[in-house]
Image (cartoon, rainbow, N blue to C red; front, side, top):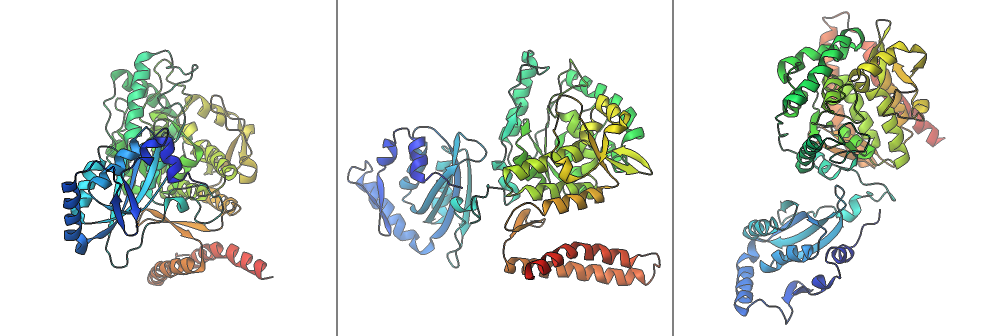
Length: 522
């Protein structure tokens, strides 16, 4: 993927490019020198030279990543901070921001002492939108991977994807709605509702990874709308919701305040989910692009709206809202098997081409949003789109001719309908069956590497060569030894333990690899 050069970004940021060309410093050998027309006084120059001598013995290599709005003189003002402090710049490059097309990201490698780093941070805060500063010891310093190479990992023109959970800050592209509503939206002509949506949009756009999710003071009208939806849906859950959904409902009532006259806060649910399955919530302004939404799932992050549908029609919404998210999705995100299914869908999307991402998004739509499963001989619902819609839930259950067995190859070609009932619904016998089918489908995605989520670092490991795979196998061997030891101890006192079933489960995950290896050797 081609990235704009620093000069191209700077020219775009500074209009004609003259402010950049008029910078007062230039690189000569190992030192920064001042041009003759530099307005800095001789005293200032001497002081900076003295400071440099005093700090030469304790210099550190520092990497700074900051984001600027694309406006005239923005880059010049930011670089002025480095000049004013006499900081030696070793490397600088730029790219368009991945989260906001009106901003640019810059990576700057410098060499300076810790005191100047603190001063630099203070100066840059006045100019930049976001900033991260990383310090490394002189000995064995390994500079960060340049922004220009992280897009592809040297694998042709592969799309950029987040490598660690904080990278999700750069994957927040809202596709539709957000603070803007279409003319056919129920709240389009309501200025009070539109202003309220602006408030929710600001919360989402200002949110950064690691921050607590701001709590919302919901209005009486919003709580009333929630209560109407809550009351009607709750009547249907015992008859139609899957067992895993019903098992977690009492805990959401106890720990998250699920009740008719209270809209639960995302932060409370976030704490609950982290404890149950490791999933986290992140506020979002509206529909994200399929790629960005699925990327979140890869890190066990679910993008969740805080706004509620318009009160004029409590049983209809053209977009996800907190009724859909909290009543439809949250109970199952607290289930370990379902959480894993959701994450594997997300992991399969990382680095995939647009066509494959759209297929995965369609499979997500017809499983996580509108899926059914068989339990005790009857169909039960687990799809959040059904569990948050009174009308469509009744429609899906009442039209058995529309319900078909889930087949990823066929399902991924179906049309996803947002403002009307679906043409078909898909079921499996269990979440495990859905996972196995999705894993086989994901193997077809053309990527020259494998991806594994590392829960300890909350990042993804790119398995691109034998060395990385060997290291992972070595790590997994320790876990397998623990499992083997436990099997021996438990089987000695529990005759009901089906060791053969567990062994077959482990072996089934290796059979596909062995078959492919034999085929390639032939």
